[in-house]
Length: 508
Image (tube, rainbow, N blue to C red):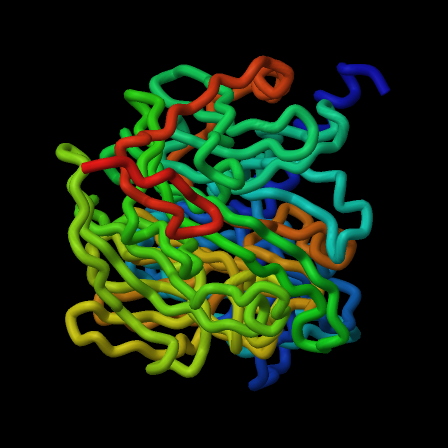
């Protein structure tokens, strides 16, 4: 088909949509049904950002024609009438409607025609005043280690349906790529790891790409789980000796555990790694995260693994701890227990602190910290002003795992397998100023039947404030480049306190 025909078909489609939106196409004769129409995805009774992509859905009601009117109080209606039950809302009218209706109720009137028209109960959503970040970054990876070598880091524009790869591992012998992280959601301050093939850590900061070799003579592993300091000049990492075990447990078919693990801090300006004997102990320190003011480093900690005891490695419970750290003077305070596993009876993982510093969002499971394989993993929240924690009502009967906050603190993005109990999908939930969460909704797609056929997992979804301005070719070239060694601060008196980090004790 030549360019002329394609261009004219696009123009024809545009004018058809315009006519449907602008003309008086109201259904006047119909019978009423008091129930809601059955739709997929479930976008009923939710709170949405004013800048989210159209909530396209399928009307799962038998009919020959479908008529939908979308509107808010005193707004112009978006009117669609079609023979297909797949509703695809045009982007520009949708965007205009939402941006003009912040704080209002969004309504959907659905009519289905067989011999006659039937009108279902009006669907109602709320449009929040607070927008969400315009982009989301994530890894796409297959499920259950089937064809797991095919993976990539992607970014999606949340205001429309544009998706683009940041890096595809097929360009470098299918090596693993993981643990992408950003400083305050800044797409120009990013870190991620390459494993197995051409290993190293990518650092994207100050418009400069650097590949780092983070394995030193004083650590048993390269950097693993990252957390940017809010100031942008430091990144806390765990260093871990990780093992994977497959099990017959129906709720957790795979167990990921650490033999040893510690926390280190990388200084971007000096290319130096430091730590403290207080966070590099024989206990297993993991999952670092910073307070918004940068004064506290939070992390989880579990007892030392007993050599030869699989039970002590896998069936352990993590507590939430914190330590003050003065980055300017490289001085540490004393470790403080924030929430103990003895209090919860469960194991804590992946703590992240709200931008206002009041709440800590985290997962809890019966044991361990690797939640993506655990059906019993749920989201919890701790209010630091009251020291009270509770299980959030946005949980399902399936796995809830990786999560993050929006910069406003009003939106939570998390992974959930609630759709089919197999694949991790991104969900959004509104979090109001009183600490109340609202019904989650799945990431909108251009084709509302997308999730029926897409069989990859959204892994580690992160909200970012804009597009990552990296060409995949740049990242590919970096992967093939020589890594720059990082330097370990040997003045630290760790004295072999851990199996992951060790330095011989030096004389005073």
